[in-house]
Image (tube, rainbow, N blue to C red):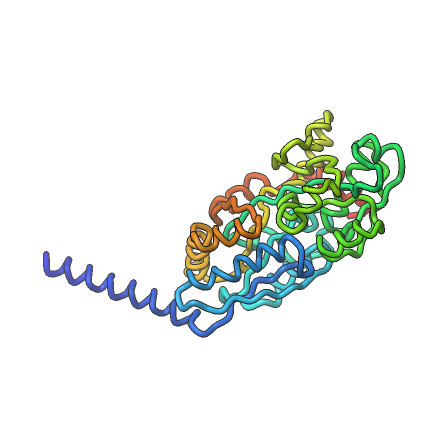
Length: 335
């Protein structure tokens, strides 16, 4: 019996070792691609670049990690690529930009994927957004936005950078005219500085990391927080909404901030590759080297595991039919 047990233990060890070696052999010499649904220079791109510098070190076989930017449709183009064109072997992942949580429900004809197809690798940080105005505009409060028309910079009609100002107009009576076509926070920031737009939505972490002078020199007024994240000294929009139905609309659109800079695996990736990538992601988030570099760049690291995000999506990622209908109506979409 003891000999049989020893033989079985030896067989299991050899088999496990062979499987691990096979996975290491799979990634060795390969390239892992991170797809970002916005232009270079913005917050999602910055976090993806940080991840790309360290993730490969924690994957067996140490594959090279590269970035591909596929902007368009508020990030939908990148997720469409991941779902329908990218290899399903664990060599492509993508950023789950906020529109991943909105467009498939509100405008299903505009996408070729279901959010339920995907699995999360993990989150680098939450991505709380704020509504800001340029200091020279004289716009400082929600009351100011109600008093006169202002131009709000956004990426695309389907992006939350466009959806949230439109919802604000309908819920609180602001008078923002949304100007789309700025592919990411980088071009939008330039437009804000040039006076082409007066207000925009931007991740607070992006302000801290990429525009610290705006905060230091009071070049922007932070009008309100746009989601669940606490921003020092800034009131949240959701706390200004009394009507429960309207608050549900707002929370649905704001959900993306809870997932923040999270990363998705292509549908049908083998479970063993998903496990390896999740372990590598978690190890990267604990890496002293990565954490030190994030600190140097003023990038906040507040991670969640892929399993935690999967569970959060199950409990929070399915809005009611009434909420979907209402948001679609506000956006001018007929389903």
